[in-house]
Amino acid sequence: MLQSTLKVDSGERIDGEPPLLSGVTVSLPDDPARAKAALVCLAGGNMNRKYFDLMPADGDDSFSFARAMAASGFVVIAIDHLGLGDSTRPADGYALTPDLLTRANARATAEVLAMLRGESPPPLAGGGRGEGWKPHPNLKSIGVGHSMGAMMTVLQQAHAHQHIAVAVLGFATRGLPEYMPPDVSQMPQAEQRTRLVELVRKTFPEPYPRIRSSGNGQQIYGSANADPKGIAALKAATDCLLPVPAFQSMLPDNVGPEAAGITVPVFIGVGSRDMTGTADDIPKAFSGSRHVTLYVQPDAGHSHFLFPTRLDLFQRLAGWAEWVITGT
Image 1 (cartoon, one colour):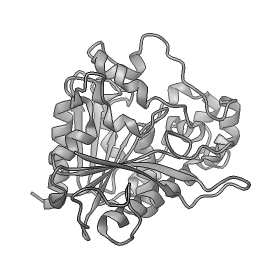
Image 2 (image 1 turned 180 degrees about the horizontal axis):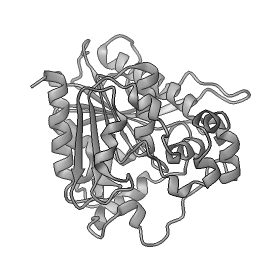
Image 3 (image 1 turned 120 degrees about the vertical axis):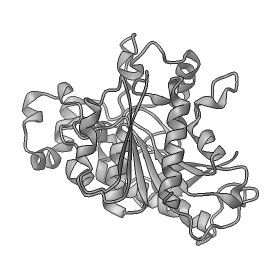
């Protein structure tokens, strides 16, 4: 696998601050000339883009989604949300609303795809597009998001219609209403969105809060089957929380209208011990798509890549993406 990192201008500005840049990692297959499509990946709450390339200290690469997909012939584009990882962190974390992040991620996606397609000259790193890379003018993209990142993938597709398909992992439009105050859960959706930042400030007094572990890890891992090596590798991907999009992701029917408006094929992947509620209910939210695939990963919690069955998830998702591209 060939890998490059870069920063691209998100196109977003906050008064009095430098331009907001998005950190990106591009992972290319060993034979870039045969790249099938680009998977554009967005991580979930309190995770940066390293979530898609988990590497334990002993070098076991079986936890890495990026490496598995590159081995299957896909380009993997992992983008840090603004405020996380290598992306710019503005002083006001409450300014990083889902709408702003959607625009920023769409801009980053467009910029990197333009480079890979040969439409723009900026390099991926070190003055070149990556060793052995030749422009792919017809390179298509598939959106992949985990947890809050899946919500952001849905919003990006609704906003920019960039992808030929989307894969949402560990996500349901039901949100996590059990963690919401009753008065907020019962509030009309239009009012929730209008007052979103106000409600968030009351819930999260810090603009970039850190999630403190409860000690048992059940909500994150969901099972004693999580591999200790994977859990250790996850520390490198652990970041602060972006409170505004995280709060919206917990609201009931968080992005229901946007999900219903998606017309491209949808892959839904959840763990059998996930936080998403009844798995069979999730596809109903994507009523506008004629092709919805549901995969329940056996013996897995919310962080799917930590479990032995991750290899089956990687294979299923790669096979689905191949079907999207070829129709067979």
